[in-house]
Length: 227
Image (cartoon, rainbow, N blue to C red):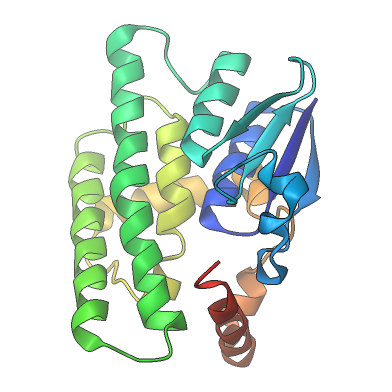
């Protein structure tokens, strides 16, 4: 049994979507990051960096794993799915996983901060992160014009990138004209495991689509900028 400590963010969804796609049993522990739950001593004992998600593998001597990409690799290895065992296949998946970890996630995350949360609208900064996010979307689009999936076969690399790209509207990044990316996105969103995963610990989609609720959510999120 896996204990998952998480919140409804793209990184949190990377863990829950992976668990759902692998069909693994897990319990959910919601972490209220707007209230600072991630800084409580009991959570810091699991992740000294004070960030979600975190898993505790009760079947493996209560082994703790933090960092969303590391969690995905660990779970895929435990299940023997979504990550090839041959050297080249494994490397391809990890390359595209790291592409999300080092590029898509940080750029979209900073776009979120300056486009949605930061009280002062600095256009040059917003443009910087949105333009870089768009460039990374174009890299994905090019790759998906060559292959059905990012690393030849469906894998944790697809899950990781999808969990972030699906939030493109919140980051203010355009997906216009990226037909290969759109094709892939449409296939991904129909997967039952992913649909369940993005509802953990609860769904934010209806809130984000409602203008007034979205503004209230963004205002509340400003409180976490320095935490």
